[in-house]
Length: 318
Ligand code: SD4
Image 1 (cartoon, rainbow, N blue to C red):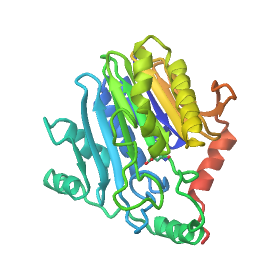
Image 2 (image 1 turned 180 degrees about the vertical axis):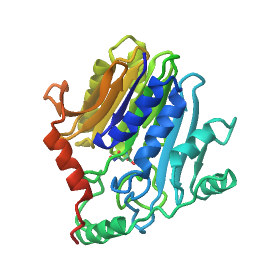
Image 3 (image 1 turned 120 degrees about the vertical axis):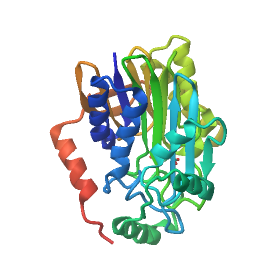
C-alpha cells in the first residue's frame, strides 16, 4: 500500500508526480522531495519557494523540513534566502549526524558548499504584492495571508516507509529572521514509520504551542484513526488557545497512518488538501469544520478548480 496526502490544492501537481513515483516502486523519501519541489518551482504559488511573498524587508526567507520515519532523521532550514529548493537542502541535512537544522547565513553556506542551485526567489509579482500589502498593512495584525499556504506532506511507500516534508515562505510581512512551525519537528511535521505522519499549516506561532503534528502521531500510536486523531488534536488546541488566550489562530492538519488511512482537520473555512492512495486517482477535497470539531469534506468541483487557478494567476492590482 502506498499513499500521499498534502495541505492545500496547490499540492495537487506535486502529489500527482509523487504518486506516480510511488506506483513505480520509488521510495517515500524521493517521492516526497520531488512532490514538494514541484510546488516550490511553480511561480504563481505565493507562499512556497519561487514567487513566495517576502518579509517586512522585502526579502524572501524560506523555511523547509524533511523527516524520515524509519530512522527518525530530521533535516531543516529556516530563513534561508536565494535557494531554489529548500526541501532538498533540508533532506540533505537529515543525513548528517549533527548540524541537522541550519538557519539563515549558515544554511546558505551549507547549500552553497553542497552545490545547491542559487536563485533569486523574489519575483516582480511578489514585489507587487509587497507594495500593495504595505499600503494595507499598517492597521492589520500579522496572520496567515488569505491564499498564502504552506505545503506540508506525508508519504507512505510500498516498503512501509513514512516520510514528512514541508516548505514555506512563512507569514507574509514577517520580521526578518522569524521562524514558523514548518521547520520545527513535532509542530510543522512528524513522521514515524511504525505509526504514520502528520503535517500542519496555519499560524505557526499557535501550531507550535501544541506540538500538534507530534500530538497527532501520538494519538495514532494509541490506536486512533488519522481522522479522529486530527480532529481531536485540532479541537483540543483550538479550545485551549481560546480559553487561555481569548483566540486561536488558523490550525489545519493532515495525517496518514502506516496502513495508508488518512485524515484532516481544521478550525477555518476554506482549507483544501490533495490526496492519492494506491488504486485511487489524486484528488483535491474541500474541508468544512463543524461546530463540534468534526470535519467533513467533499471533492472540489471542476468549477472550483478552474477558478482557483484563475485567481492564482490573475494580474496583481496595486
Ligand atoms: C508559518 N505555518 O510560517 C506557516 C504559515 C502557513 O499557510 O502555513 N501559511 O507560520
